[in-house]
Structures are given as C-alpha cells and as structure tokens.
Image (cartoon, rainbow, N blue to C red; front, top):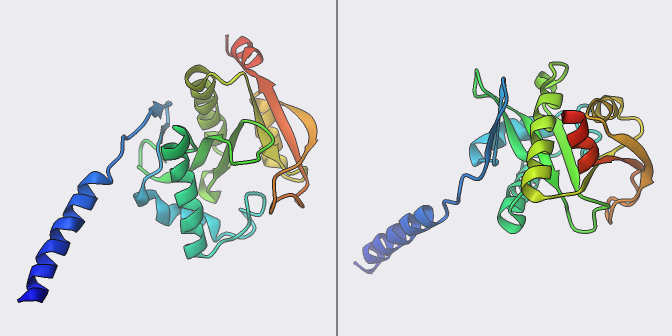
Length: 201
C-alpha cells in the first residue's frame, strides 16, 4: 500500500516538473530558407551526429561521444537561460532538418563577444552559413546592443575564414582562449556594429 502511494506521489511530482520546466521559446528569426530558434532537445540527435564526424568538427572541439555531445548541447542551450542569448539552432524551412548552430556566444574568459557557427556536413557549400550568420549578426547588434563582434577561427580553417570575409570581418590577429583551450592556435576575426550596419545599407 505504501509503495502504491509513493508511485502516485512520484507521478504527480514528475508531472509538475514536466510542466514547470518549459521555458520561453525565445526569438525566432526567419530567412528565405532557414529558421533560427532556440535549441530544443529534439535537435540533439542531429547535433550528436555532427559531433561524431571527427574530420568535420576538428575545428570546433573535435569528435565527441554521444554522452559528451549531450553535455556540449546542454551548455549551448544553457547559455539562453543564464545570459538571455546563445547560439541558435539552424533549421531548414522546407524540411525541418537541423543544419547546425550559429549565434552569439560568450563563454567565461572568452576573448570577446563572439558570433560563432558550426554547420553539419550536409549543410555546407549551400550558402546556409552566410544566410544564417547574417540574420544572427543583425539580431545580435540590434537586440543585444553589442558594439563589436569576433569570430574565433583556427588559421587552417579556411571555410570559416572565407565566411568571415564574406560577412565583412577582418583578421585581427592571434588571440588566446581560456583553459583548457589555451593551447589552441586561433585568430580573432571581427568587425564593429557601425561597419556592419554601413555594409548592410
């Protein structure tokens, strides 16, 4: 009898937790081909698949086992709760497919306010990065009021450097990430809000 009462009580507690854990959907940005929105748990399988592709993710932390990828995913999603902003999930409008994550990102000890990106292998070479990063930069400058942004890019990461150039950013030179990433050799690309808005006009 006691055990049945415990199960009934546990069921009620679980139900309350499920209701209370819902958070605001946050901003939703749309472009001709994409939707940018706050990360959701339903996106995680596609993120884990991307992070298992060792060659493809070598410049954004390297390959991760699924359990480690979940912790990275929780960190990306948690930025929204802690700071009120974070990387967006990039969704293809026609298919609903998760394509990657792009947006504002400022971990503790970071060398500046970053708008960063990472797209799945299937999403590369289609202009999605430029389309999504443009929307993210517009939102970041307009809604967060940042006066400048950086993009942390390894010198050998030529596709990301090419995207930064297309966005109008310039290579500001080597920068240093906080431990345990301080051994990585990376450059800071960046631009000011004024330069961005002038170029957009």
